[in-house]
Length: 331
Image 1 (cartoon, rainbow, N blue to C red):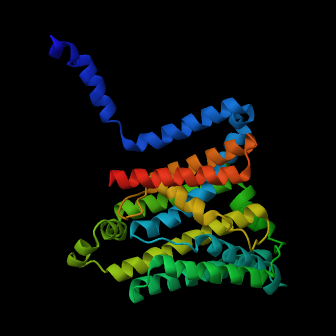
Image 2 (image 1 turned 45 degrees about the vertical axis):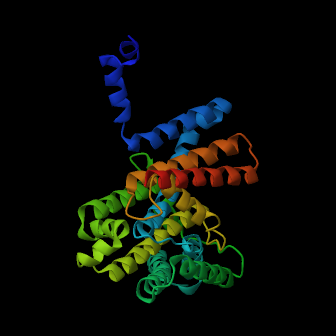
Image 3 (image 1 turned 90 degrees about the vertical axis):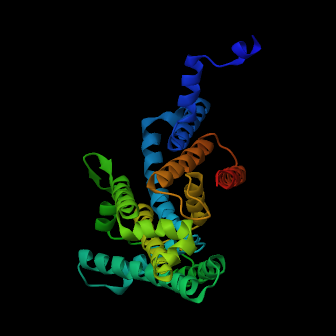
């Protein structure tokens, strides 16, 4: 009699089966929605259309930078210098666009400034990738050194002050312009994330990155060029960071030596919260986008609720700890 009473009915068994088979990919998007609703109850301005548009725009910048961090995380690396790389790119672009090309038509010197600033980011990525991949130095040590170099360069080049005079055409293309009513930042971020998704899932390089992070020994046995792929991961990370830097520079309208700020922490948090593993080999664009939305919604809501900035940092830190703990348990 007891067995009959405790044994699940066919209906209950069907429900339990459906619950157990809910895709883990749906958990974070659901959490984003719940967080938004709860914060919206606390302050009705959170759920206004203007704020929803603001959240989407803010998340677009973070998603691009988190995707850059994800590439390195996939191969068991980490880039502490990514935030200050953003600062170097921003200052370099502003200086070239406003000072070094006087007398040249605006579109021409804007293009030159873009090329030079992206080149600066690629130098950082090349250095990080070479030292990690070919010299075997720990990724945290290398990128910590690069962090300080980039911080010093951005401050020295700008003398510690913002560099104004960003070309209006550049601002329109990357920030203020709209296509079919969609803001430029969202369109740029969407295009970058789509391209990255295709690279990671439908190219030899993308699949090799996953294998390298999941099992380095198997990668060697399979004949995969581990050092070269690691180098390209850091180079790609810096390139995407440069694109993000240009997008944010267009938004601020000036080259900012402190633009990187806490972007390294936020990019890593968005990636890890989204499900990208610190042990490598696990992650993707959907994870990056979900994590970026969660961080943005949480920060946005806490700002509207006038929660102290220091408490916000504590909350973000606790969220990261929980996400990493869950990743460890899952692995």
